[in-house]
Length: 592
Image (cartoon, rainbow, N blue to C red; front, side, top):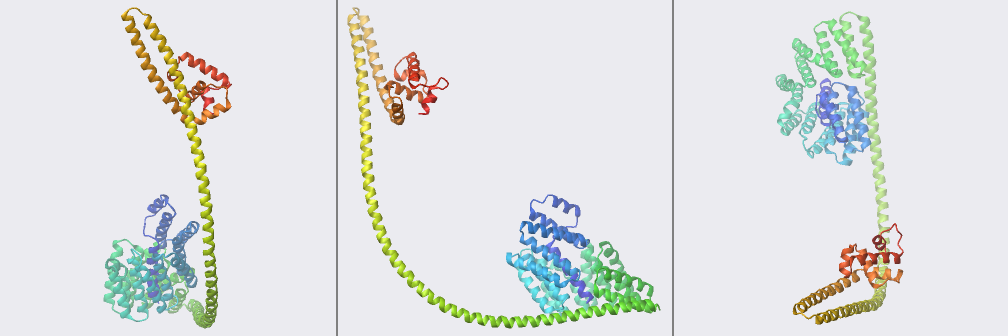
């Protein structure tokens, strides 16, 4: 039982490392925590810190687990909550509270199944299997959980270590059931998963396997391989455990001096790491050796140390064994008073443990009876539900038949209604189209009339200007006639030609420009005509040009008048429009 307990403690600590990434340097962890980018990174660093402290500072391990749980709940991070619950289960397992540990592992498992977190699910199945294997001795049930863990591990990337641990734990369970061939089969499966990892993770388990078969040579060979690996990697915690295993091997062979040598190598490591389970194993083994070799004083010393730690951490089985060792040591040294005292304590603790075991067994039997009763009740209820379901199915079929008939009738009515509705819609649309066509025709006629009106106005303007041009031309021709010299007449005719060309181009451009302006600013013309009815056409045109931000010079060229006339026209326009002195003319016109 002592060896099995050590196996499973090691298994838990290894599997904990899957939830807490390995990093043994505190300063690096603190730096990583400082520069974590988000809450997921922060939780990952906490996991690494948890792994670091799980073997050296139990209280810090508890605090870090609480940090992970609180942060994961706050951020609604399911994986973090599953990790924290699994860690809580490990903490309770280490203190011997196996039923409470199982509750937390089951909570973690529910979260993993709900959110399909396969890597953590594999770890949790392993831990539940360990509880059934060690605390309950139900190896068949433990193997079921280990197998489920393997299923989940195979669905996960980078799960070789998980697979190796699960295969190893199945091997341990078969070893305890004395099915050594089956055990060896699963140890072999571990090597198939990854030979390099299995060489240092499974060699310890193989050593224990060969110890059970009393093949000490093979066992020592496996332990030596594991010890060499842990010495190279400077992993003192697991090095300490392997040293204890080798000490146990030599103790079985009754090679006491060699056994003491290995226990003494393991002792300073266990003291430095404050590893109470390892210290209890070492002190108990040393006490047994010294008791066997009649060194009763040392037997009492080491029994007392084992007794004190077991009592302090409330580890009842080792507390009972340590009290028994103390009683035997005092008895051999003829201190009967102390021997009687510890024998009495040993008997009380033994009875207490026996009662606890019987109570657990009774509760287990009662639980099985309750489960069986519940199963029967479930089956009866299932039959009732099946009968009820058949009745409901018949009723639902009849209702469905009636509903289909109603739907068919409604569908027929709907089709007829739709036909009538669409006919009405077509009539309405035809009527609307006719109205739109009539309206469109009216608007088109109106626009055509407006265009024709504008063309008449432009034509009138053109006639007026041409008349002015002809009058001026007549005057210039008369003046040329009056000149006597040929040179004077030639010069005069040349001036007349230039005047005709210039007037023709200016008149054409002015009309085209004015037509373009009128078309673009029809609304402006309409508004300014309504608001200021006394404006002349030239003033309206001037208003448009000012609104378009033409300069005085540009306006004089367009309207064929002097710049001075433009300034005077602007002044008169301003007065007619009654514009305040503080406002610019173009600003006023832009708002119309």
